[in-house]
Image 1 (spheres, rainbow, N blue to C red):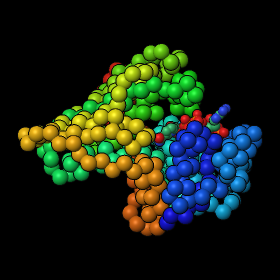
Image 2: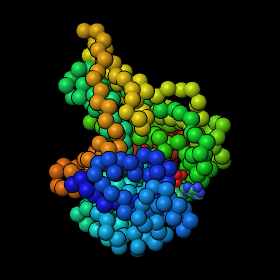
Image 3: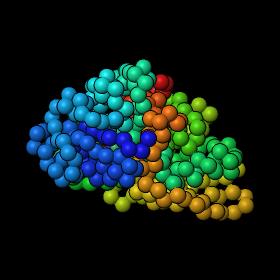
Image 4: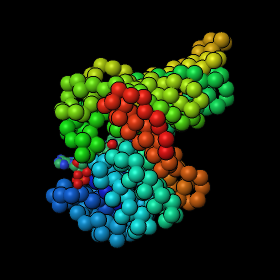
Length: 332
Ligand code: NDP
């Protein structure tokens, strides 16, 4: 299904700058936007040429839409998703799915029971770099993966320096924001699930109170692989990357933990070094095409509700580990 009529729940940066063009470029239309503020609803709708800007969830869900895209702050995802599911709408929900595991599980199960598609907007698994790495691993090019390293420390731009740094009730902190993406990337690449995490956090230069704006996390996977992730809002000059080191080779991805279709991947084995061919397609659009296929009954979304549960569970375990200093098991 490529002519999806979308209702946007949240007048947000990610909707405005990334998702609306992706909805339209994949054949969809944006019918409505919900905001808690009548002025913001009206202005957002006018600027983005959306027919309806409203503060009424009933009005949005009662309109002629097939699916909703939920990109409000994280404490709102569960009640908003449950309302949309009850109205029979398919749901694309931002990560982290929720602030607590039970709420996330409830909405994923509600979608299953209602027979609607539920997807998590983990875009990185749709990146050409990740797809090339996944193909190399599946083809056995690096043998058995032993270690992974994710560099995902960046600088939070000024216009986003709000709730992410100050408001735990909305899900502030770099772990729920970025480490969750790392976990999803690793699960996708390795075909493996996290088993336990050990995390050290930092409140460096931007966050306030007990909110972490930097974190380093060790993740043990079920296969025995050990991964290390480095996430931050505070580093202006760091580059991103993802490396996987196996018994027969290493995959070295550079500039590949981004929203843009950039980055390179080097495969290094006994045979030498090879730069992998990368598809430069838009990450969000690839995800939306899979979402449309799932609605049509062909396969699953790129990142499902269950995928969102895993990344949330690992993120929450990392938060707990950062607070207690203990290694924390991960299960869903
Ligand atoms: P924003 O900070 O842009 O918006 C969050 C909320 O703040 C909105 O729902 C909105 O409320 C309110 N808001 C927006 N602009 C203003 C304003 N000018 N004044 C007052 N309030 C305002 O959120 P993000 O887009 O950064 O993140 C939203 C969600 O998307 C999060 O869950 C985040 O984790 C996720 N995200 C995912 C990304 C991905 O690539 N998958 C990338 C970025 C974010 P209202 O809707 O009521 O108007």
